[in-house]
Amino acid sequence: MPPPGQQTVGLNERAACRIPGTASPFVFRGDGIHSSSSQGHAGPGGSAPSSGPLKTLDDAVREHIERALVLTSGRIEGRGGAADVLGLNPHTLRGKMRKLRVDWSRFRQ
Image 1 (cartoon, helix red, strand yellow):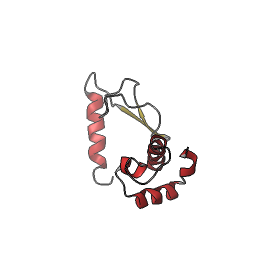
Image 2 (cartoon, one colour; image 1 turned 90 degrees about the vertical axis):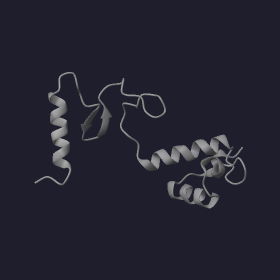
Image 3 (spheres, helix red, strand yellow; image 1 turned 60 degrees about the vertical axis):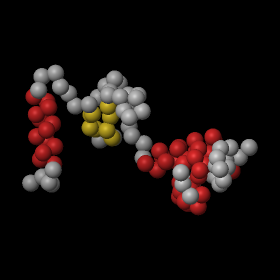
């Protein structure tokens, strides 16, 4: 017997496959979830989702922190610092940077 909810997912997928002109917007493969076409639905930002595999959450957070450090020239604290831009306490940001191995000195000018 499938886990709770699993059977419903299967029923919905089979029902969608039987409706003429419909297709799932995603393709599920062993290496991740991919968009079934490059012209997917627009996301919250107004652009179509990428067709590549999803990044890990740690990779996405690391890139976001690094972008903030580039914008602030490596400054972490104070008004206009990376912590302020990201809406984080500076100590929280430093902890995340340690965990994700982000070296702030690379961004200092």
